[in-house]
Image (cartoon, rainbow, N blue to C red; front, top):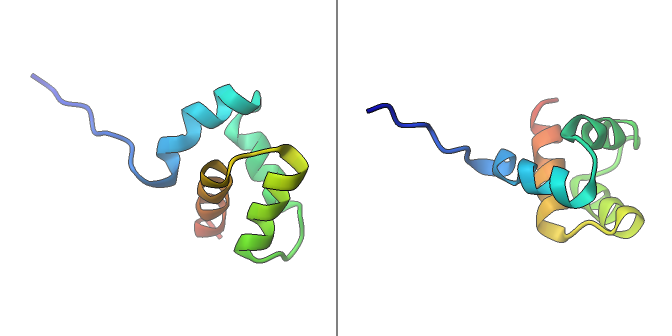
Length: 69
């Protein structure tokens, strides 16, 4: 019987982020990358204050986007 690998790390939050905030991950990725040369916590705070995102979700998105750079 085949077993599926469980998604780990920041990507494990993606289904709930899309469901709760109503936008695909690509939307959030573009928003973060277009926000200028901000530091990790500055980006997290922007998502929290301007988009009412929870800390865990915001942190996961920022970590994932910055790791791709």
